[in-house]
Image (tube, rainbow, N blue to C red; front, side, top):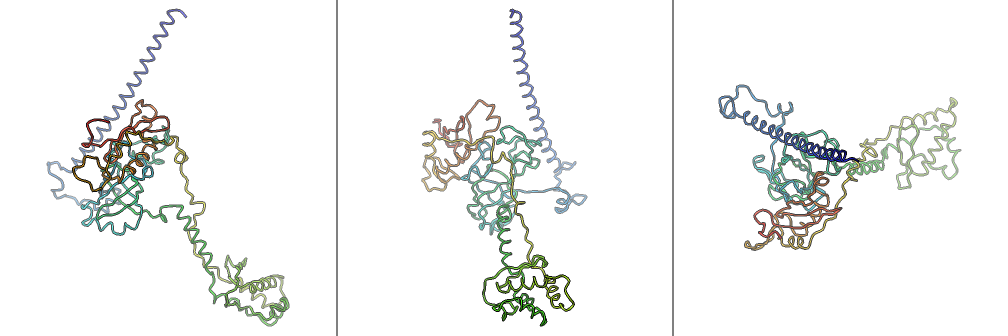
Length: 468
């Protein structure tokens, strides 16, 4: 290769590098522009909200008498104008989005409190009467820390490691209405305050509603089991009452028909009538093909006798004129009313639940979590919540967590699910990760298939001067 060609090759490399840098700069400018647009929209909405409360004269609208009657709450609801007021705000062991579990099952030891606002009910504790009978509750809340008002039709769930799916096939917080739903364990109720565990909400989350969790209504598996039990118990019920069966077996046979029946039976059955025995005997179920599923529970001898009657009656379709009694028996059997079986809703195979494959087999595997000796020692310095200790004690104290062991379990639950975003996991070189749990600031780093806790320090004003 000539020196001129080598020089051209170097120039091409420099140009490619410059193009790459320019592309990154353009991408950064686009992101900055998108952020500015979102902020502009947010400011416009705040201005519109403020202007809607003030009329053209500069007076507050609620101080003036409206010229036209406003819509009632019922009319507004029918027209789709939803008015919601938070019933309370979450006080949680998670104070920031960073490190908060994405699902409540990730960290079962996480705790929170929810106090019902007195502005909603004059006696908030009255609204909670009876709720103590349930172990779990549904919490409907708002994602108030989304950071922007925009949303997209496709999102990238962290468990898919960058792949896009529709927003309604995920539980992404970035949704048109920013509604969240979580199933929390109800530990106890004290007055107007609910004490919860197994939560995935940060402190200050507005709660819109609370509903009890009822497996018979909310779990398809439980509904299927109950349906099968009801179906089995329904089969054991007698379909025809004893009196009705007894009367139906008192066939009005003439002497000629009785004579033919007696000839077809052996000597042992010759003295037995066609009446239902009231004593407890081994019962069998006889289902006639023409009774639309009607079931009769009869003694063994009666069943054998009825079978003989059926074969005798249906033996010859062209019966002679003198066999009227035989036809009468056949007609009576045909007119037997069907069984009174209740039609319970049956789910069976149709009620089996299916979920996406990436839920059970995510592309991001769970991580092993380790504590350094220094981090373990720092964690043991924390006092449990509600522990009676002198007020002048300098040791840090948890507000929600009840022991250092419970805090360690919560840290393992958060880190084992890899709380990092796809960008931090795949592109960011900084492997350090920080999050806050209750009153502790956690410092850790991620390796290949594991996470290691490096430091556990008191959060906020309790943080010591020396870092280690």
